[in-house]
Length: 164
Image 1 (cartoon, helix red, strand yellow):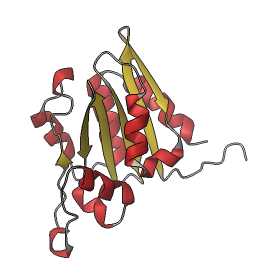
Image 2 (cartoon, one colour):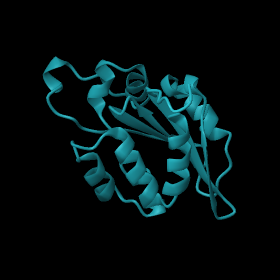
Image 3 (cartoon, helix red, strand yellow):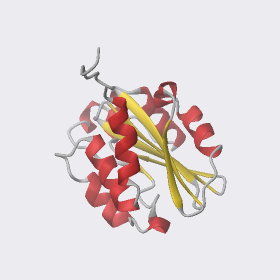
């Protein structure tokens, strides 16, 4: 029905620079809970500095998958998400980390490569500051990352097109 908004549980956006211009698009929904599929999709993209996917799951947490010169780099915004979400479990398994136990659920902390965007001017310290904002939802953090990396307008257009 026109004008009616639909709730989107998860989405994955692919981003890469080609000839100095950001290319941003939506990945298929099926990839939002399939780490191997995300890695394969990112590998298929060109990109001057490698391509990456930004995945928002229910605004609870996000995952960054970056493939650069064949090397897979991952970032999970909240390791405790692995208690409830398959994608978070897959990321922890890929990183060879354990799913947190019940005693570890009081605190939120990231897992993976905080320096994933160092070469693009977003260092580990700044990434840590973004992730430390416990009042921010995953979509807000991803928008901030996109803004900081220089493709916020294209990112926001893709995400806004999801809610119709």
